[in-house]
Image (cartoon, rainbow over all chains, first blue to last red):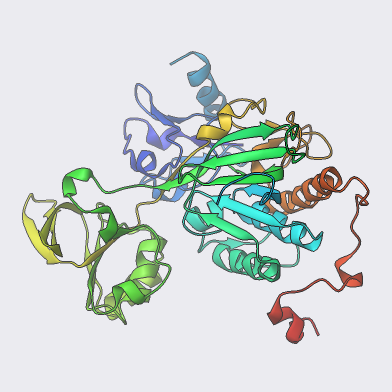
Length: 80
Length: 347
């Protein structure tokens, strides 16, 4: 039940979320950030600090952003 | 305190979050004596570290309660049973005692403060692990004794110049709390926007709290005692701010750490598998709350409370094999209840 980073992060990568995450589970990809679904403790601290509101819980994806949940998991399965 | 046959407690609880505190209450209710350990200097675990101001709406009987209020209530509930608190200590190792020599079978918890807590049973209510406050960069040169990560009493701040580092709710709440008694309060925040409620920010300004944004504490000035801190601003300029005490409200990190090494069969680096008695794969060791996993697990505070009662009841059977699993209802016993309720809040 992790949080997921969606579309608005692409090419922004502000990293405010990285500073906030208590378990360091946010990783940098080629053009956006990703939350590790097994490491995320679902605390929600990252969500309000994102300047582009890119972060949402996977149980309530925003319309049109559902694919980021799978993309997020795939990012970590591919071994980065 | 040395562990061993003579002074071992019935139940040692690892973790003083909501589940651990309720387990301590319920063990007291069952007539067991309790020690409870937590790495943080305050009780409340994840709730105190991360959500003291957030409103929780899914705890039975509390339509809306702040994290801090819920923890205060749990503390009040357990207080008649006076468990021994070992706060600010992290349990590093858990060793088993067979009791072959002295007949006192159980476990010893070894903390990083070199305390050994002897216990007949252990309940691991470790949540997502131990929380540690984020520290200021060592380059700032502040001595540990001049920096707090929680404000627990106003006394150390009276008439002092206080610098609070951080931009969240805790930073602003503490600024509001301290500004009436402190000589001065300055909040230093790295970003240009505060995460704290806008209302707290404007209230702080009205109370005369100085708010420095896009600024960082980069150094300190000592003349025997802390006199000032050096603050670097976004344009690269530096100012000297009078300061006798620093509050670092920079948030916390959580790590499961040592619990991973306790042979509890941890899954995915995170969860302890438990059975229906909340028992783990180690004799005399139970678990409850967010750290547990089983088929159908739901990670909620209310579920943690139920698991705590189950774990304590089954631990009680290990300690007193003749005792019933179910200890009766609190309504039918003469066990102590917290004072504020006893004087009539319920009536």
